[in-house]
Length: 595
Image 1: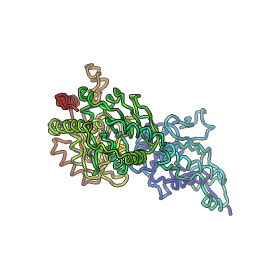
Image 2: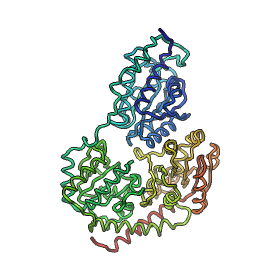
Image 3: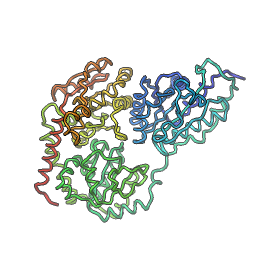
Image 4: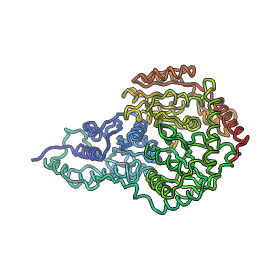
């Protein structure tokens, strides 16, 4: 029997069903005409939770946050033309951080390109420098072979995005009118749908490789022989979402080797109830002391995770002659200094387990050495000075905010960090805590665009309390995101540090250039954030002291709505406070204490 269908709807529904079967649970959509078939297919499929955003740029970053928090691929849908370009910043960030996004762009038929057709640009492999795969199946078809080819292509894209290459993929989908379900274009046999359901998708496999198979014996042999030989070593855990199993194995490895762990604040190792005996959180401060850093030149460095946040550690690595190895899933090079010897593509957890097994056989146990003792001593001195200089500093300043937030944050919270100074200050001043906190950031390309949208996406998954620490320019740049906060009743708490412009430039040499510095770099905005926030129906409070901050934060945590806590700061004074802290650390460590 023949039934009437709209081929665009059939095509879009086949795509969405395949996304669902491949593990996609969330989608971020923006309204448009050319993407009507896709929008309807997502709207009618109850197995995907869809979020609607008028602004495509906000939509892209919201999807980025969803994918970070959920750990599964998230679909993004937009119409044709410049709407596709609005997604690009989020795609770049996802590419740099290997976050799985399935970018579905609607398009005009190829024959309309270059003919002045409305809302038509060349979308062919538009994001080619920042995606893992491009797939354009052409105009919708109604035959079995074309539909199965579409499904196979979607399955391959999801597999690539989540496993074999990890990161964003682009699916470009041209459509011809009509788009609506009841505007029929074809008649097909009713058994077509049964045949599609029964057919086996040969590409619909996890694609996940056993991590133990990724480890080459030569790698382990090489590093284990050096580790057995060298007593002076450092383990670095850079930014990454390391789970409890890795954290435990890495801790064991550290104790066996007697190598301290320099844990980036966004590596997750500074927080939680695991053993932190060798976890060092104040290395940025003591490595800025040239006299002290000269005393602790390592022979070997093992780095897990992405490029570190700390400038002090970056300079230390640049000047180090140690044998340095990077370990991450895809063998990416996270080495701005260019001094690393190799990057090994393997799961960090499996690597730690394998190395621990070898050290067990060798009965190596360097738990307590003068090497680790000296570094722990420096860490303790930095903590003492932090408590004296930073934790007791007067209101307001940007440095103390970090400890205030960590004190106020409920156990089990998410914290999203904006680029510029918030992520740096978090790395400088967040000490080890037993409180369970998961830290997020957009340090792939390190832009200030889409920060609030990303935080809102994170807060939409799992129901955890979520806090964003952001600056005034990043907040201003993403004001459109507040519409989504209102629509989806987000209970995100935003700690807004307002120093009236580009405060990060105060730490750069250009800060000495007077009026041109103020007008062209700081670029004061003098915005009334209270009025802007209230226009979106969100709760707003101007913080007037540290006790007031704690009170307002506790009140905000009880509400089920977006709350902005603005702290007006002086960037110049905050820079002075940071420098005072680093100077005192240097002074204390230069006074003595030899290995």
